[in-house]
Length: 89
Figure (cartoon, helix red, strand yellow):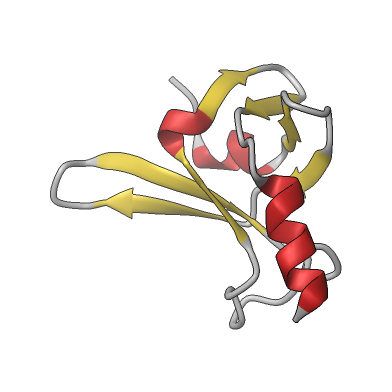
């Protein structure tokens, strides 16, 4: 079993390109089913912004490949495309 405080101390890394997305800032929980739905990682440059989450990475729990001692590995194939779209706006 893992605690949410333990998750918050880990960096999120993509397995596609090894990109460090940063630490988890929040977790989405389905209270009806009692399970974690997703982890939320702040968009670059928004580490302390709690109220504006429109550009944050919302990573579904099913995309977590492994939770290690220091990092969480995620399988997100479209992070680069998502960042390109943000730059075009």
